[in-house]
Length: 383
Image (tube, rainbow, N blue to C red; front, side):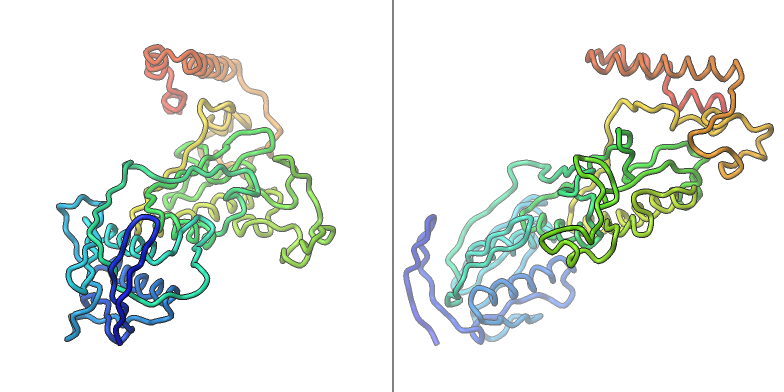
């Protein structure tokens, strides 16, 4: 069944021929890369949402001369895509597998779908399916396009699970974003966040898990920070006690450890959980060309965290006895020898000099101080 119509939108006049799903197929070769196969499924999905017609995905061109096909052309540029109609065949071309997926989402936008971080917006009502007459090439105006969410607030990623991160990442790809950076407070008045761990090489196992960790936490209903006071879930109004499944309530990384770990094993576990979650999330992001970055604020304001255990907890009598479980808990300090006091004072003075240089914007002076007194290098020399 065919019907012709003029379709006037805000930006373009289409001369289209309506068709039924039986007339049109989406061609995706069996050996196509996973990202191109996803592009085919996304075209099928959004076409169905807008028209109610389910296009057939085939591995070869059918006898019909109507369809949507995909092509990779590196000469376009890695993130550029082209939508081009020849007769009744729409070709979605990308400079890479990822750009083909970008083109698929651009086609969905031609159908009236809009993408936002919180989800998709699909117009009410359905329209007849049509192969639009298109000839356009698009490339990003900026090489890096993305997000830099701040932790430490319940409105940010502090409460996210791996699935929450992936939901946001999926929308970022639809918006043609390619960067996710996580701001981290490693040192602040209410504590530290486990997105970034500070310590020394000997405090880390071969698999990357920490041997020694300080107390760190993400937001939870038990935490007193960021303008939020601790509260019991059962006392919440407007259905909070029904919505939240535990008391206290927080992200999966903090389950059973809220507001923060108390023992050394619990403190280590918070960082291990956070690392496992971010490994899963970042691996997912990289599949779709989204680069990831974890950063913190500099200069550091608590240099004792970067000091070996014998400085922050008292010097052990011999190296073999050097283990955090055998030494006083955080907050208690054995007396330091005069030599160690002088070394710590010198390290603090050098770190302060670096901070001053950074504030004054003296790059040359800062580099000079870093060459002379890199705190980690100084500690390595002592060790």
